Image (cartoon, rainbow, N blue to C red):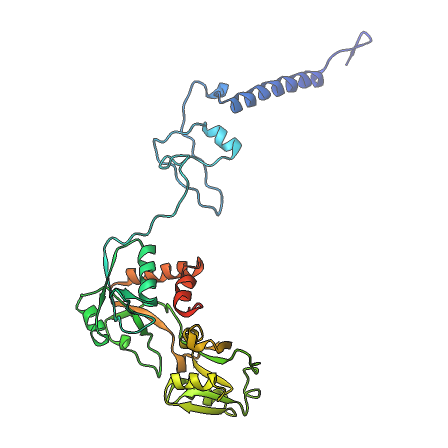
Length: 338
């Protein structure tokens, strides 16, 4: 309004001054907040502040009585996680160690090279034994190995004379019975597989592994074996040459009396890495039809020992992943048999 020709200050200028003062006071309060000083309106009173949980998220509860180096207001402002009083800030997060709280006894045969046998000193050796030793180390327990005859392995397990059988015991499958199919037993996942495979002479150019490509080709097999039965079904136009033993079938391939040899992959790996098998090499894929070749070999345990079974399964996957399994396998078969 105008008074005597002069414009007098009105309410708008007063509100402007009031806003400027409020901004200055707010800036001072924020400075105190980040410096860790209590705000003026909280300096003389204490109250419990409940932090509401964000929607659709889990927030860990803070135990009563625990103290934080920052005030509640600072944590909310900086969006820092609440401290965990149960762990030192310098201690790294780590998974709990899986340690078996008992020693175990491993039963094996000791008469089935290269899987399990006695070496020159009389000690148990072989792929089964080395792999079992690595599994025991991985689950951090002490293992004792005891040799039993094949027929006594499972009875001894049932009677509590051992905790696990590691002796190339095959997993039961339709058409391929196994002693491990009895009641009261549980099995791990396979620790090696048993597929069929082809071998040829090293200088030969192998044909494609198809029925048409193998038509008329001579394939050496062991008479009466699952490999003869599978080759007859899968490659009906091939010419199968059946020999009384695997050794004779291998010799036939080495001497050029057959174009290919079809047999157990693990046996062929072993043979081709020996002085007798330097003539030949493996070619093509694995043939793993479980109806013919089974599901592989497993560790056998008593029912009720599922914890040990699960630990073995987890440890086996770790050995495969970090290359330990391949190194053990290569010492006996020249390649992985997993």
